Length: 198
Image (cartoon, rainbow, N blue to C red; front, side, top):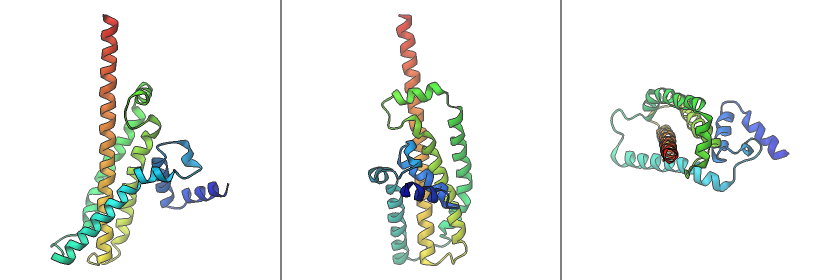
């Protein structure tokens, strides 16, 4: 009960609570257990940690490059984030809205196909990247309070930029998987019709 109570408090934490809730649901692959417990560590290692590690490594490499070669003229990751993320959020919300118009038959067929996702995790495959982009925008806004040329600010903004890219990559992968599932279902339906006609 203590763990459940702590998790509920985390979920209710202002600003970051919703992000963590979707993050845990994403790690849990949509299992309803995300409401009462943390996803297993193995799930976090496979589905969540890589995006953070990639962002940390790339941001660090960028800072190494800057320390060796100097800061490129006009280089400001924060400007890229504030300029691009709002449009990407609009795109992501559009993708999220598509879930509500997907026929139930399509959802049932997804669970029967040999693909890497199930119908119950579809909302989290969009909601988590969407919240990730929103949090990136919020955190980047806070970095605008500091000197853009500060090494720590630059590193953090670069980290946020790469993380946002990872969220978009996850969304594109999700759309590609749905498209694959749709084609498989159509082919299966056509094959069944041909078999019936024969």
